[in-house]
Length: 193
Image 1 (tube, rainbow, N blue to C red):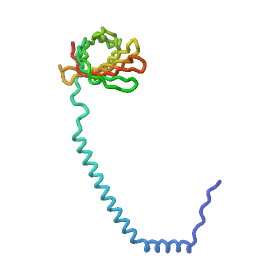
Image 2 (image 1 turned 90 degrees about the vertical axis):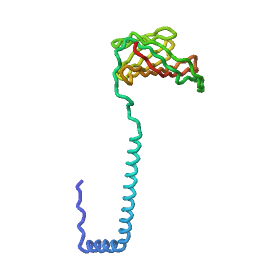
Image 3 (image 1 turned 60 degrees about the vertical axis):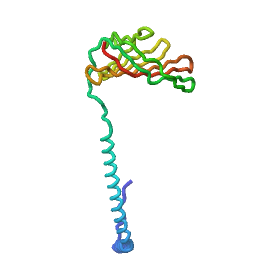
């Protein structure tokens, strides 16, 4: 299939189109002026909105805290840690949620950190357990899956300053019986042993 060129316009057809354009321009010249004024007003409003948005964004950024509240400090050389954490949240899900009163502080020791085997020992009131140990430079994670399949996670973060305790969080989700789940979270600190 070949493309056909359109039929050329006659001189008379071109003259009629030019006349129609001139008539349209005359009849609607006042609209062009009004449209230009409207365009200028809209542009002015948009510039004010952009300026206001920039001002608000700058103010919010100036008021926002930095992403990191302290300079990165490496972990001290560790062979063991003693941790004391206070209860932050305790609750039961059975089948609806019920917040429980605070419990006693949680104290435990972390020993036998083995980066190659990715294991450590976590010992508390109920004896010591071998747990999975992960280290990424900014935090250490100790993950325990109990014999009944319950999950606990302890995360120890790098200290805010050299020689200071290391912030720590401990979370556990324990199924006591079908549809009866104990949820608890503790926060505190660990010190090098």
